[in-house]
Each structure stands twice: as C-alpha cells, then as structure tokens.
Amino acid sequence: MENINSLGQMASEHTQYPYVTGTSVIGIKYKDGVLIASDMGGSYGSTLRYKSVERIKPIGKHSLLGAGGEISDFQEILRYLDDLILHDNMWDDNNSLGPKEVHNYLTRVMYNRRNKFDPLWNSLVLGGVKNGQTYLGTVSMIGVHYEDDHVATGFGNHLARPILRAKWNKDLSFEEAVKLLEECMRVLIYRDRSAINKIQIAKITEEGAKIYPPYSLKTFWGLAAFQNPTAGAEGSW
Image (cartoon, rainbow, N blue to C red; front, side):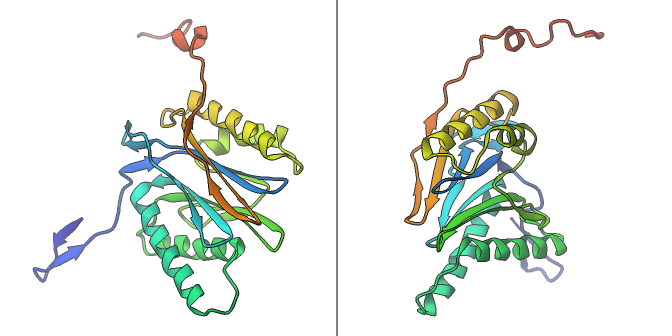
C-alpha cells in the first residue's frame, strides 16, 4: 500500500492489519522426524475466499516452516529466509543452517518487527532434523517462542493440543503420526469456522523434506447438535 508523505513523495506502508489469513498449524515429532499439518483455507475477513493456500514450505536442507496468520506477511518471512539461506550458502564451508538456528533467527525477526510497531501477523511452526537431532519449535507474532514435542498455533492450541497430550508418544510411526494429525485437524474443521477439510501434511527427516499433495478429510455433519445447534437454548431470540 502506498500514500503521499509530507514531502509529496510516495511512501510505503507495511501491513497494519491482517487481510487474508490462514488458521491453525500443528507440528509433532515422530520416530523418524517431524510432521507438520495445516488446512489450505485463506480467509478474507470472515469469508473463506481462497481454498488452495499452501502454508508449509521447506527452508534450506534441514527445516520445514508452517505459518498461520497473514499470508502476505508469511511471504515476506519466506523472502527473509531465502536471503538468509543464500548468504549462508555463499560461505561454501560445507555447513548449513539447522532448524535450531532458523528458529532462533525467526524469534529475533518477529520480536524486532514487534518493537517497531510493525509486526508480522503470523504464528510460526518450525521443525527439522540435523545430525540425527529432531527439533520442533514455535514463535508468535510478538516473539514468544518455545520448543516442545508437539506444538500448534491458533485454535490448535486450545482444541488440538489436549488430544496430542493424551495420545502422542515419541515412538509413533509415520502412519500413526499422520492418523493423529488427521484426528486433530478433523476437530478443528468441526470447531473452527476458518478451517476447511482440505489439508496438507509435510514431513522432514534426515533425508530431507517432503510435502504431500493436498487431500480432503472425511467429515460427518449428520449429528443432531450440528443440524439444530440452538435447540434448547433459552433467550429472547
């Protein structure tokens, strides 16, 4: 967005309010690495305007990044990371940035932009594997960050993580981990108005990252509570 400044010149403005946003992202560790899942909806306000928004991207050789929040700010973060990875590769020292380094970089970027009162309106999930060490962390738009065996953004913090606390274990196979993520995403589809039943899952292992094609989860809306949600509710309406 551009406007005219006091000198009559074109001035650039950054995103001051999120316009097109994505909802929850979930990340879990499993036996061989890390899995990240998100749906593919892009909401324009309360309208689900876009149905094929990819919000999981590989970063360098060892990391995967998933993002909830403003899509254009996520694209800006990807540009920052492209520059970071390019600069690192130019050293040509047979070393590459691992997920811990990328996560630390993102925490500084998000906190720096917050302090400038020009935040990047995203919550991020960063996972990866390097030298046999599995890493998973998250960072919010104000720079709050932590590592865990499973993380989530948005409504996933409230609706998915209780499921993960009850059912996750470190020895999950790939198939078991995918099934657990699908269970979490199905709950979000039912309860989060911004979620759609078209999801994407990606994995990162020692061999590298793989993002699987999108697919739809099977849902069932025939329950009486869905058909008549206001039944028995008292009020003047």
